[in-house]
Image (tube, rainbow, N blue to C red; front, top):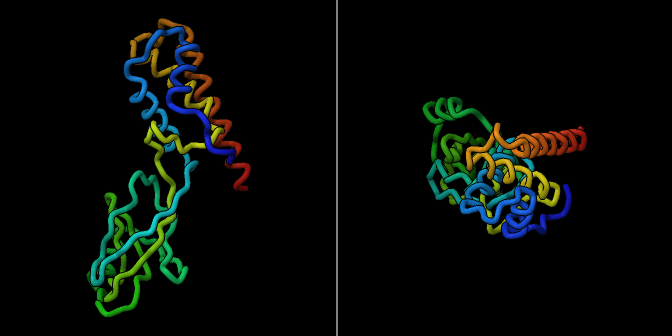
Length: 194
């Protein structure tokens, strides 16, 4: 992935104003946030990790803010917990949830909560690795690979918010550029992974 973006929301707004010929964009932050969330929801472009603390004899901890998907969890020793479905977690919990163990071995994610099994008699620190949803317009975490995607996406959203899609050919142009740039970046990431 490329270097972090150096574009600020103000720089994006300036470029969107230039490309669309508008003098103002009253809902710029909302449009930019919508594009950031949409793009980061499509593909795990933004990776993060976060330390989580599970209290002694507890089974749950809140998932990290803005997570898209939990990719894995390791304990303080670096040992990976096995990810299981929530249904399997419920089965394990019903049949084998003895407190008194040193640490959890499995986890499930359900509705923004991480469930661990078995519950530990000690407080445990876990590290969650996850793909993240970008949603802070004042702190754009996406790499510079996304600069044009963000600009083209917001350009399209400006026309959409004004009800001009289908009336102004530039709207279609920006939408096509936005989709093409996303696809190119997904292809690049997929090639890198193979």
